[in-house]
Length: 232
Image 1: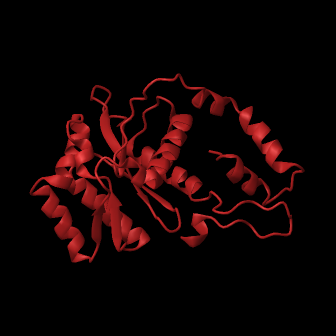
Image 2 (image 1 turned 180 degrees about the horizontal axis):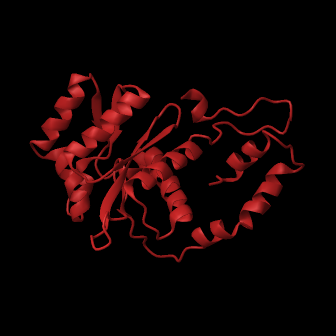
Image 3 (image 1 turned 120 degrees about the vertical axis):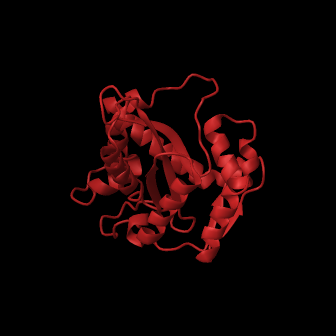
């Protein structure tokens, strides 16, 4: 569950101060068998991944019974635009009710936001069924009214980025990339139960929130770097 070069060096310096630390950490990470296997040099071709406004997935959960089919689940990702803090929630489907429950859990654990930004629903027109559920939630009644009324009761404003402009969502796209990279390295093709997957996502969330927000200093007398976890 180690992070990248900056996070690993920052954690190491809490106990040791290696000489030429960045070079040593880079060499150690490059020789990590699991990292190399999970992040090989990709073939230059389109990558068929599904990344939507708050969701990434689907991921498969271990069924309760041996003969039962694997259950699909999704990861709902919230990113603070000010502190870059990440919050991961495991949801069982793409329904409006599941999204509102995930949002409710986020609010009661992280406090109520004033503004929520997401992809524009037109991005999902003509997409596959999984993405079409999110498109319907954003654009069709009564799902849209249900979400808007729920947010209006708490004074939360929902903003949609411009149509066909995914560059406006680079912040959460980067968070999706990091979260999925950790999942692939730790789990591979293994299926976990709902409880085990929720635990793994919490650990990944903690790792992502430990990334330094500022460049590391070469002075051993400097304080520890500022991370989203400090601000949380």
